[in-house]
Length: 188
Picture 1: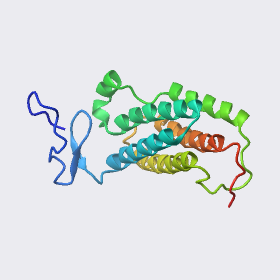
Picture 2: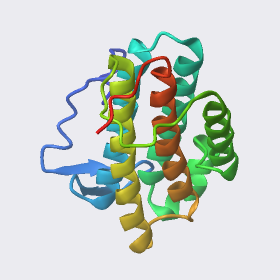
Picture 3: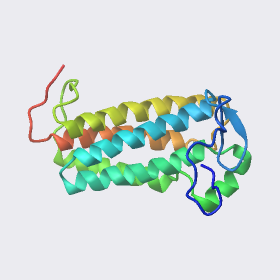
Picture 4: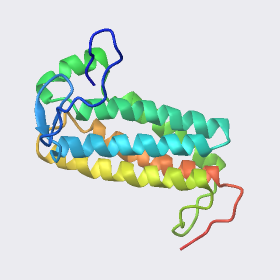
């Protein structure tokens, strides 16, 4: 977005018309760059989680989804930052931390204690909310695969991003099952 003086920022900046996009804190890359692919997948997951939150009725499920959305914004910002600008990222936004991963692990443990897990594959979509959660889980898995590629290319700061994304998808699986815990599983 660009600002045209005192007016509201413009949505159509036209800076991406050539197939490039800006990284956070500077630098331009192709929209097909592995970083753009990774943070783009996270953006998709955040949107799917927004749908899940709008569809979920249980306050605890909604609160957990909102926490994940906020965390994933942090993860996307980290992926959209060139390694040489990491210090600016941590000053303004923060980065994915072991504490964030541990918080997801605690949520997983708590939900698992309350939710019977299926002994077979589950066909997603028993309810709109769980279907949206499963969609978000699949998108987070794609973001994780893209982050693995970034790590292999030396473009990740460390392994915490991978741990976090792995736990996030695990949490989304159990959260979808928790959402539908009173229904019989539609098994494959």
